[in-house]
Length: 147
Image 1 (cartoon, one colour):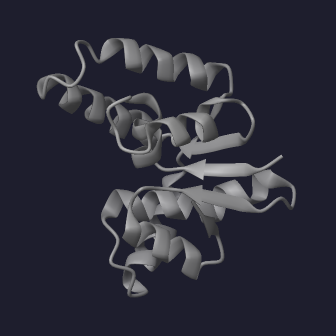
Image 2 (image 1 turned 180 degrees about the vertical axis):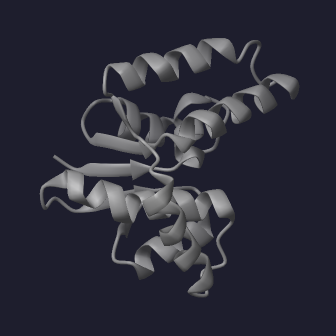
């Protein structure tokens, strides 16, 4: 089974129907055909994105999306990896000092994908799913397949 690490940009797209690429990412991330993992960080970023979408009038109420995210995480449709700052923050710092022009939270997601996701896959390759081009390039540079 394919193992996917999804950053928040991809998860938001899978949930919000007005996002470009929604149908494709919904199928990839929420159909149960792949093992999908993400960082605990996605919970906060997702809540922020839903609040922003509500304020912009894109959705009537963000709570239904937050509740669905929680249901999907509890059912392990989305595997949420606990954030271990003592391991992940130094790895994220290395990513941003290795000439990768990553924003802080993108570096943290990539550090989780590289350091915490790979050991959970039992040798299966990890596919990074992101809508952020800089994060995609950094993931490729570190040997991850990217979609």
